[in-house]
Image 1 (tube, rainbow, N blue to C red):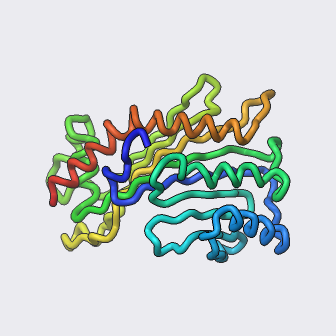
Image 2: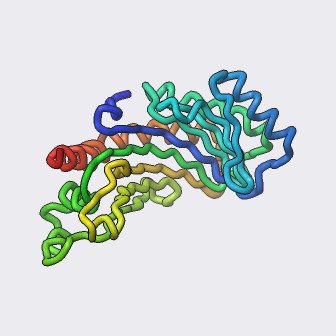
Image 3: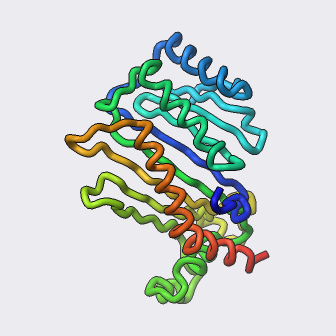
Length: 250
């Protein structure tokens, strides 16, 4: 990794989703053959579970602390890695999935609605998440004047923004910081220390009208863009202020 993200947070994960226009196959043999092919490539992935009403998920031992997973839902195919040691390791499984889906699940370029690549970080912290986010991301802004008023302070603060990364708006970045502090915790001044603040950075690619949409090429591009966006924009301007604000409360 160009930056050791794990040194900034308690958990780091990389998720890839291919969103489809048509429903994905749901036949037992088709899905079993697909998951068995994944298991041959990654022998530790042997836990297959029902994921909701119409989805299935194959994964490593979820209690291991770092695990891969692959899911097939009605109109979405996903894969990811929790706490990878490198970008190469994080991107290995999605690349295998992308190679398999055209002939094992029938996903073609015309079928793809969008592709998402998400970098996520969890920050364990004690105290009011809203106050931490306000201090880290809104100090000195116009919003800080709203927070500086009589009472308990920010009640709900999970900022999110979407920006277009090209002129035709087919490539977009979404950044979200989620507070999990509940109103009852603020009233009682008792905060759950087991709930983290989460940061999600997703770059989504939509097909460009009149252009080919090669899934492998698109994913490689998203990988490069995501790493650059994290290194240049997210880590110095969002991650570092959050970790500093959390450290002040320890």
